[in-house]
Length: 314
Image (cartoon, rainbow, N blue to C red; front, side, top):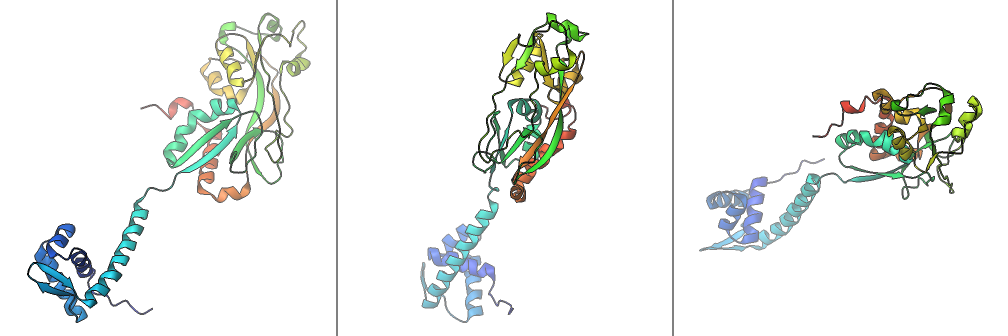
């Protein structure tokens, strides 16, 4: 390419300002220099071009034909440069991502660690949609989902997050030791309504876990698995267990922190292993930086440290 042969850019800028204002004094104020410096720059430009750009009269500048032609080009060029620079200086666009999951996974596993995503990617606006209903991952209803099941989900990537092992759990204040002691305790039940819709993330292969399933394995004499407190939200059942209101059958992974702290205990078995949880999303969406960032954050939670070690309030 032929090198551009341009006059001094400082001289061009001085001329453009003076030509717009038809005043060296006002141009000097705009560019934070002296009027003498403006006049000197314009003289140098005229000498380099070999033409007069102004007709100079006392306290007045009048553009020549050549000056008018140069002003039009420079004004358009400087405006384009200013607009581009302004765009470059703007903060990057925000990205809204909707993640669908169950209320318990959201409250017990995701929310304590949202600070890690926010700190690493402050331009991502994460919306956590909680529901036991399956949703379409169409970029409108939701972008990604965390659901349990065996899969496969046609047309979607499913990455395993954690195993789903259900255990009896209660407050240590109940002092339970043996399964037979359940007949004198309140059973806490979580009854979930599940719905499926076309093109949605279904809970394929998911096995319901309830006290009836647990009793079939243990056969505790006299245990009425239909009695007790009923909840439609797992987090409410966990809260009741923490308050000593009864014994819940819960996913051990979702109460891991309470078990570690001793606020809940697993007094006995057996444990029931069912379908694991997966992160599910359309494969083509992984090319989007925001989707890739949320995925990385979620997968990183599989090895998350104790909650009190991070995300401390200021």
